[in-house]
Amino acid sequence: MIGKKKLWVQILIIILLVLGTAWAGFPILWMLLNSFKPNSEIFAWPPTWISENFSLDAYKAIFTNPEQVRFFMNSYAISAIVVVVTLVIGILAAYSFSRFDFPGKRVINTIIVAVQAVPPITLLIPYMSLIVSLKLFNTYGALVLTYMVFTLPYAILMLTGYFNTLPKDLDEAVMIDGGTRFKALWSVLVPPSVPGLVSVGMYTFMQAWNEYLFALALTKTNDMRTVPVGINLLMGQHAYEWNQMMAMSVLGSLPILFLFLFFQKYFIAGMTAGSVKN
Amino acid sequence: MAKGKKVITPYLYLLPTIVLMCILLIIPIVMVISYSFYDNVIINKNPVFVGLKNYATVLTDPTFLVAIKNTLLFVLISIVAHFLIGMLFAMLLNTRYLGITAKGIFRVIYALPWMFTASVIAIVWRMMLNPNGVLNFLMMNAGIISEKVEWLASRDVALSAVTVINIWSGYPFYMISILAGLQGISMDLYEASALDGANAVQTFFRITIPQLKPILVSLLMLDFVWTLQQFALIWMTTGGGPVNATETISTYIYKQGFSKYQYSMASAGAVILLIICTIIGIFYVRQQKAGD
Image (cartoon, rainbow over all chains, first blue to last red; front, side):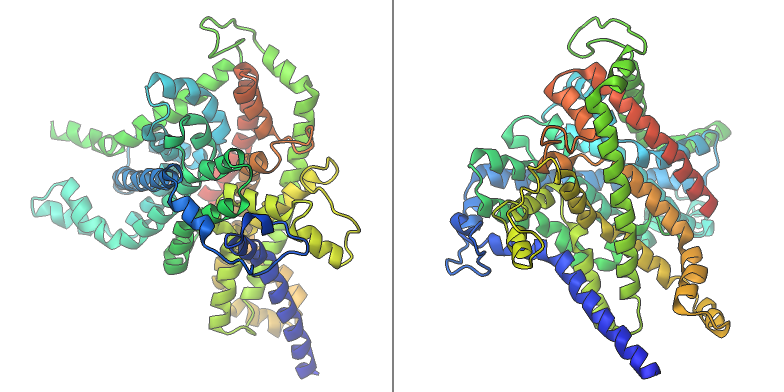
């Protein structure tokens, strides 16, 4: 009886695992397969799975087109700047939240938690005039600053949590020895928080790399476009070069996939910090 | 002197944050609210104060009402499906029938959709949902449909198609969070439940769900707000069309502002969206504080 029940459960689990794999993995597999096909085969009926005309032409086309290489440079540069600046400002703010009690702390904290609920599109309308008057329209600055409105609060909340787990004696010892608070923060609190910084950094990178709305509206010329906007531009310009769009999608997804596959623990910690409390 | 310095120290550390949040969060919110009470903002140098007229116009615009209906359907179906699929996959990955290696591999596969940006997801699904695409081929062969369906170009099915795409792209967030929650439930509780003679279904509703409740509430609220604001995916698959079959509040606001240059109307729509999100946000903040 028990053996029968177990067998039945095992079969059900195997069926679910297979269905789940098809559901989650098929679109990604199809993207990958189509990036190696000639454009004429994309909508072949019946579809070809692995093309007889397998080629890397679509990837070559992307790498030899300076305009498209530029999308990647922009995305890497903007995401890297956002990560570094978010971490530096986030560490300073988290130190303040973790080590001090001061008037206004609760108000600032509430604003920071609430940012997660502010729709980007609501901010975009005033940004159109604000970013123009700050002379930042169509620059990296426009994207870096506006992305930080969303990346910084998350970083502060997570880093405050990390700093709270470190005893106050640590930084007080540095100050008794004549060191400054600033030195105590960077020499004593930051080093043991590196795992937290990695998680926050990866989550921040992902947010910046994936952002679409601000990148679409706050940049104008093709030399300022990022990958998410650039993929869509391929559609109009080259009359649906599907294989190239797939190649660019694969290339545009690699950085996040790399982070996820090789730093899974940190990646998941950053991803779940907003909903899961330990 | 020393005391005065001590008082301002926490604010010095917070200074960059406060400056950034003032200029790029607080001021813009004040600006968008004030825009919504004026006529022809941004374009006209001297806009006229019109009170609530923009709100009246937006709230009686049939397109906006369709957008609200579409948004509600899109959001509710998405979050229910996200929850069910996320829960199912998390339970599947948490069974003792799977070895550690198998769990690791399937966890990576099931989490994959989360790793792709909206424009990639949009373009891949547009390719698959093309009338000559692979999904029509597979479904016709399986006998599910009898002729090629224009999934994203037909008014009858476009909203469902876009919702399915959104479900695909969003469930891993639930799965990963729930999995983390499941692993935090003490085995003692399950053993006690088994000693009481509870079956699997009873244990699920008496132990698993109550233990996961704080996570589930956070997830549902975050997802509600995120899905409500979903713009990129809809914009790049259907652009709100055909006609306005997939028009949502976000695409409506974007079109008012950036296609028609009706920034006042866009602002009124944006403030309405902000109010809805703020209400959910307040509940979220309370929930987070209660968890501390």
